[in-house]
Image (tube, rainbow, N blue to C red):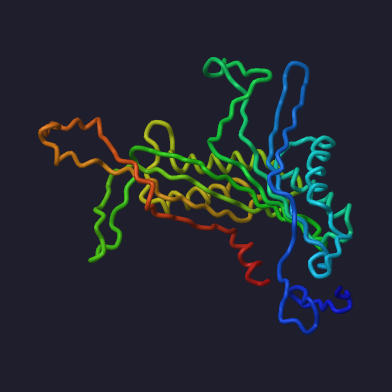
Length: 327
């Protein structure tokens, strides 16, 4: 068995011994997909939160890898139990708050844990409603799964950091509008086949993530909903006439810009918007079936998901970018 004295710590990791050409440059272990639901019964009115949690720990030593010595390992089963026990003790509010709580627990409980990484996805349950408008009655204890967009967060903290890094996000926000979108005046050369599109269907599935500059006093639920609303506002606009989009790029930028203007606790946001195309079907090949009197109010389109254009950008506050460049 290899002695710990033969272990040679380097700047980036650990050599398995001083003569070895091999280096463990990254390592860790944890428990994925821990599903937990928390129910609060306040008389007749019940509330629920359901998370799927992943925990990962990075220990100070690598003797479990190098020597087969398990004495420092906090078992993945113990990490799973920790999720349930902290949920029972503290409840579930936002994914970010629970991730911060888990980081603090593992770092304070185990002195040999150097880094904690927590990934949490929230299951989108909403209270059932009956009726319409402001008079809609919300059910006391019945819920419906409403996956308009999926919420997630990643919380990471090392032992030498005073606060965790919190990156939150949303995925699978699929949106579509039937007008007020164009794509014209792009590069016209021998490789181009796409004509100018002055009025087209615009559809995409938004994926976005953002980093918080602070975790003190942040209303994470408000921030997540505000980001989603900024995306929808800049995609759709007001209800009657909407908002014109000259490109996916411009719509994406406006959404990110409004997020940073509206939420000072967010220092950076990235967003991806892939095209989900809807092409007009060519009826000119079927003159015996469809006559020339086309109904302008009606059209038939062919949904085409693949191949798809992919548009993305990250927007930072200039002050934060300046600080990053100096690091």
